[in-house]
Length: 337
Image (tube, rainbow, N blue to C red; front, side):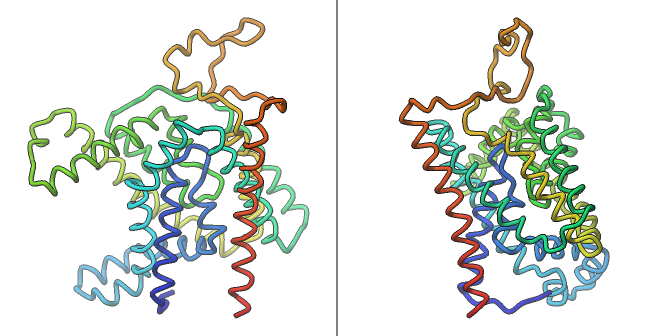
């Protein structure tokens, strides 16, 4: 598993981690897709699998070099450092863009996911009945999750730990957006906005030598939430990677088919023309055309082709598809060298 990497390889992995972290924060977009298209998905899963009893035995016995090599730690550190860095850089930029140019951001992601469907579809070499059934089951699951209603916010630390376990699946399962799952669990704003901002302010305070936050009850509450969420995420990564590594080795094509179907079925989550109902305070005032109360995660609608911004959005969709095709083209040519 351990590989000798050039400086360019290391920088490339950091950038991929950056992209993965940014994708994980956007509801409807899965960091796992970035890993799959970026060509490091299986290495990611098998590296997580190495965080096991043998690894801890090496660590606690002081065999740090063996632990480092056995767990492929260099790879994981580069990916995670990029992901963590993105939460305070690229993710902040994405927050701004979604707030001010939401339609175009969703359009670009929609295009990239369409491109990812094409990319993943090419990985299936053995088309048979079980493969088609896998795609159908994955699509049904994706569609079902797309239209589930979100719960109310819950800051109970045990529930937050559970959110960490479930939310981190976006890194290990392409197509399953951890951020969107957190919306359904009711804790997206709490965990990925308020708590992350509190952690960011705390880090700045520590670097400035200001520890007054220790007396701030609200700040400490958010830090406890971040800690619980982080522990849940770490636990979830280890457990899900063990399961995924097992099924990938034995049913690689079927798992790929399920992923392909799931991503296809989840396209409704990233449909550009929508309104985020879960963010509105007056949900009880939302009704459909028949006067029935609407309770949903998004209110989706068809684009108005008479508007100029619709055609700009379509351009972004095509650009998103083009980005994935360029990555695919680059990957093909780099293997030939």
